[in-house]
Structures are given as structure tokens and as C-alpha cells.
Image (cartoon, rainbow, N blue to C red):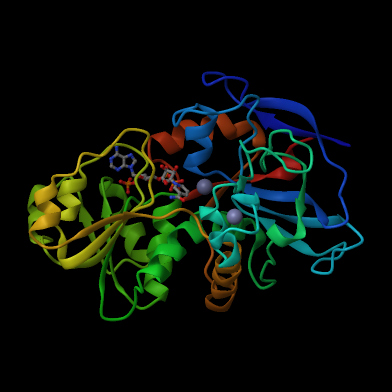
Length: 347
Ligand code: NAP
Ligand code: ZN
Ligand code: ZN
């Protein structure tokens, strides 16, 4: 086993703190990556604080990982020592179900998540990217475009793919009015990606101080979602809305903005149910759907798309000892627009 260090929560109420643990020795198909940068997703907070239920402790979050390959097993052809490698929300899956066979590993009933999952090889719980090193089967390690700034690539591994996948699945593109709700980590990637796909993009935000940034990031228009007049003007105007909000909010006010046959996709995952007024769906044959991250082939496609279009996250780089402060700021919607941990600060 490989002794290493990370930052862990020991209970729903304890702050994250330094923690020593072990990674498995790389097997024939494994890649060991020394982590350079790890993005901070709101799912890390939901999990560390057990807001969704089911958190195992100690909990080391982090699923937006980029780093340097330091060791490979003898059957690894995809990577060699010294390469860059990236890991997102998944580290394995059953590999035999319909989802796995079609590159939709995220929907596999036996998908193994990067943290708070159960590792096949050891039978022990998985620990995420707020750590020095990680060992992952080569099939779940992504290739990083070499032309991009690595610390700004890390958030693509969750915020990027979680917004890219539904935009592609619902065929967002030129000629469509697309709304992105909430300008946080996911939302700002949603704005950039929908813009790059050619859509007319409107940001819905609760934060008046984000209007200018929203436009700089690629929104053609910005609506303050708490302003009833602005929301009334947006009624029945949108083909597609991607909701990236982490807390309870008025979903019906957003459904009301969809055209006939429009779709609202929920990727934000508030722990509490969101009450839907069914007449918002019935009268305009609207759809209310959800989407979970993305599979491995699509994650690689997204990284390549970002490499080609020079798309990266806007980040605030932090040292790991600032992680608890970063969580408090994210909860106040005060981050531009993703915190990324410089893992060199974990000694
Ligand atoms: P984040 O950076 O904290 O952004 C959330 C944004 O939501 C905030 O910046 C804010 O935007 C808006 N917001 C926050 N509280 C609000 C409230 N009470 N009412 C209305 N708007 C509010 O979070 P994130 O990392 O982007 O994650 C967003 C959500 O997606 C989380 O629940 C996370 O767990 C989930 N997630 C889901 C998937 C998936 O596969 N479906 C993957 C990753 C993350 P404004 O200031 O612009 O209003
Ligand atoms: Zn995430
Ligand atoms: Zn499967």
C-alpha cells in the first residue's frame, strides 16, 4: 500500500482537516497519478456534510482531478510515466450493463464514484482528490489537452461534463434560446459551453453583482431571477433551460419561461424536493428532466472540445488549508467561479 495524505471530514459537522491514509498499489491496469490540482464542487460540500444522506466517514471529497502519471501497471498502454492524466466523478463501473456498454457508465447501478464509493480492488471506501496521489484503472483516466492551463482544466472534470452532457443530449445549438440558471461552478461552464455550441444564451442569476461577469463569460442576456418583471418578460421564451442551483428555489417560475415543448433539465441537486406545479408542464407540453455528470467517452469528447475551443474554467486558486473558508464562501454564492486547490500546498 502507498501511504499518503489528504483532507477529510470526520463527521457532518467537523471541518475538513489533514488525514493520513493509504492508496492501493497499482495493479496491472492501474495508473497512479500525483495530483496537481483539484476543483471544489458543491457536491463535495453536500457529501462532506451528509446533506444527501449516506456519507461514509472519514470523507475525502474531490472529483475534479488533474495530475502527473508517476506509475503505470504492466498492462497499461494508454498512459506512461510523465504523462498528464485526469479523473472525474467515476473510477469504475460494472462494465457489462447497457449503460456501461454504451459509454453511459454514470448510469450504471454499480458505478463506483471517486469518493464515497466502494473500491472493487480493496473492498474499502474510495477517497477523492483532496489528496496527494490517486490510483485509478486506466479505462477511467482521461487525457488532458496539452494546450490548456492545467489548474483551469480541473473543473471541467465535473462542472464541465455535467453541463456539456445535457447540452449535447438535448441537441442545443444555433437558433435556440437557452437559459442557464445559477452562476457558480456548473453555471459558468454551462454559459461558456452553450455559447460555444452556438445558442443564444441567457443567464438567470439571483446575484445582481454577477451581471457583467455573466456577459463576459458568454451570456447574451442576463435576468435577475428575483425580479418579477424581468421574469414575466421571459415567459414562454426558451427552448431549453439548464438549472445549476444547489439550494431550494422556485422551479415553477423557470418552467414558465419555457416555450411549447421546451425542456428544463435539473443538474443542480438541492437535498430537498422541488415542488412542481403540474399545470406548468401540462399547458405547454413542457418536460422537466434530470442529468448526471457524463460517461467516460463523452468526458473525453468534452475535454477535446474544450481544448479545440480554448474553453477553461474561471478559477480562484487556493491552498488546501483554506478549504473550509472556501466552502463557506460557496454557500454564500461568493466564488468566481470555481475554487481549485493547489495540491502542492498539501505537505
Ligand atoms: P456553486 O458553485 O455553489 O453554484 C451554485 C449557484 O446556485 C450559486 O452560485 C448561485 O448562483 C445559485 N444559488 C445558490 N443558492 C441559491 C438559492 N438559494 N436560490 C437560487 N440560486 C441559488 O455549486 P456547483 O458546484 O456549481 O453545483 C451546483 C449544484 O449542482 C450542486 O447542488 C451540486 O451538488 C450539483 N451537481 C450536480 C451534478 C450532476 O451530475 N447532476 C454534478 C455536479 C454538481 P447565482 O448567484 O448566480 O444565483
Ligand atoms: Zn461535482
Ligand atoms: Zn454497468
